[in-house]
Length: 247
Image (cartoon, rainbow, N blue to C red; front, side, top):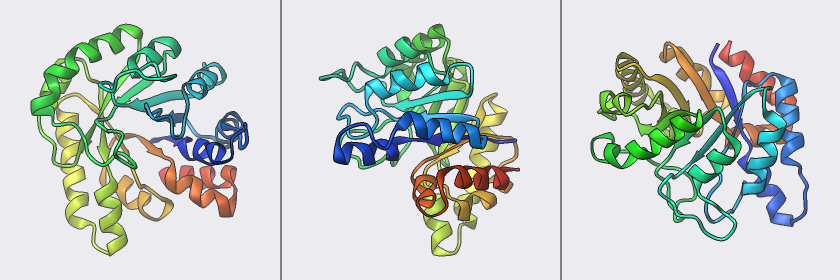
């Protein structure tokens, strides 16, 4: 079955808006695990507007040996203030997977993937370092991306397809073209020896259609929609709803 990794960034956003420790990102992770999710995702950013480096460390201690731990981020963003940099955080906590994302401070959320033709040599030493740490390495890519053989050659093991355009097209009523592009991207990545993850704006409404179109989908990372839906149905119930869709 496709693994569900729950992104907890929005829990941290809510906590940070008030200060203090509530709602607890650790308790949220515990609830998701007890409901059956297979992984927890966080995306620490240098501006620390949601998940903080100390959250990353606390989750690592709590999750180890229980479910997969996926840390997302821009490997080229320099350290600042209390943010030590993505690679340094990975060296500290040794997550299961690191998903490299080319996002910047000016982005509200991730909105594009790497250009594998032009970025691959910059990524090579970072992938080497993450593999030496013991992390699985995934690259965030757009549907229609090319150059998967180059990614595989430098040690990348997975891609994560950016599904924002798919979710938008689905909401507009016709996702056939973009869904076909996602499926073809997944097929070419798999032919190059890479496993395929997906994430961004996936929801209970659109996940089933996407999952059916992508044979061998390894993992979905879902946060914004899942946490929003949980406001109405509860976190554990919502996680179980997603797992049922993936089954």
